[in-house]
Image (cartoon, rainbow, N blue to C red; front, top):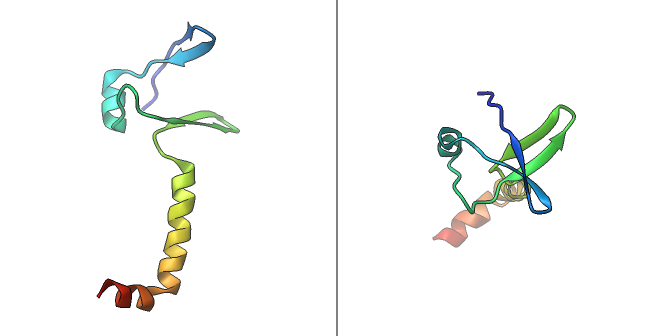
Length: 75
């Protein structure tokens, strides 16, 4: 879904306000953190933490490598 959002001055910062229906679909609310990622096509605003994904990918590799050991530890 593409929505036009008007940027506003707020002190020394520029703010963007998400429409309520969009915030609801993204499961974000006032006070939540979102991430602005610069891309070659513009700015991606997402509640998704790219560092968390990196950590999860590392965990998946370890989990596969030590699958049997982790099973024994879980007993």
